[in-house]
Length: 452
Image (cartoon, rainbow, N blue to C red; front, side, top):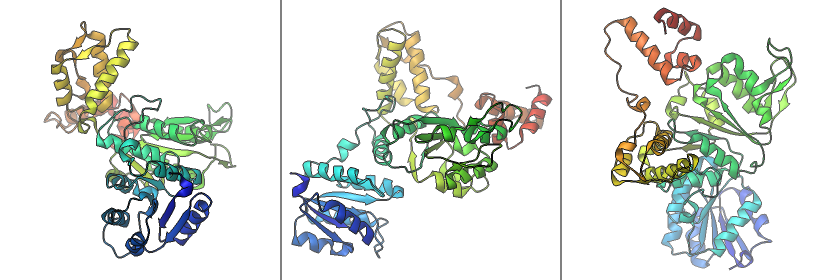
């Protein structure tokens, strides 16, 4: 069936949306019927059969369902309608929209949409009507150039769906997850699927920038603005203009740095250090942190107004220990990758090795698995990896919540704590001082005191 022969029902309580959709679809379909009140949906479906239904996720109604869109989707299914249902959703409801796919919706479209994209979704729905698409849409991102972003678990399928849906928009995305889960790969995937794919992708580890470097690195500087400013230099935001900027470790920046960043995001302008004139920027903002969202909501640590700015859409990457068979999928992938790298035949995994991989808790997540497989491929002599060939890093051997040794001496306890935090951050004094809750100067004094 072609879109030209389709009858479409649009249900949304926003009159402007109904008008816009009617004007858009009229030249492309056989019939467009619009309805503001979802209570009339059952009567409309009894009177006439529709090929497609565009259904809003949220209505101003007395229903206490948590989301009216899911309620009315179920009603459509109860009435045995053959229509393919496409949900209309806002950025913040993408998790609910993914639930709607599992309950029988064909697809969803995010407001504000691109007209060509909406027409393509409707045409696809008509051509595949009755076959369903949710499973197909969640399989993988196999066409991406970032092959490590693999998974068949339900959690990863949800992430793939979010990437595909959010990427074509300019929504700011906050990527959450433990260290080593693949937050940068998700950011690159979003950029790759976006309309900015041919433009720059600029990554900045903002958590590693000192107070003095933060503005210069992100916003640029004028010649002579400070001692080492020997020439005019564009910052990372200007370098990313037209493309995507990815701010990693956003949860580790100070309140002062947050205020500077918020000003830029409110106005989409930067002022180089030492300059007076603002420079307009056009960037897609992606951020990542291993800090839980609940901690970011703590105003003593992070400004709530900045959280709202960076968190139009949130993507939570699960830890590897919660991804089931993805562990073996990734392990086999890494054996192939490193066998090619070191010009060795790709080894098989023995039953004992797979059992060991599946039973481990992976505090270092995918990154830890990757390094363990790389070592195994390098050191193994045979064509089969045994359990003893899989050696996990001693860096991750002690759980993060394990109490420190019970030193009775207060100075020894402080020395041990400082040493542990320094090791955790690879000797980065800025990050260590932040975690310890002291200034860099105070940390320097303690390093001298304890000979560290």
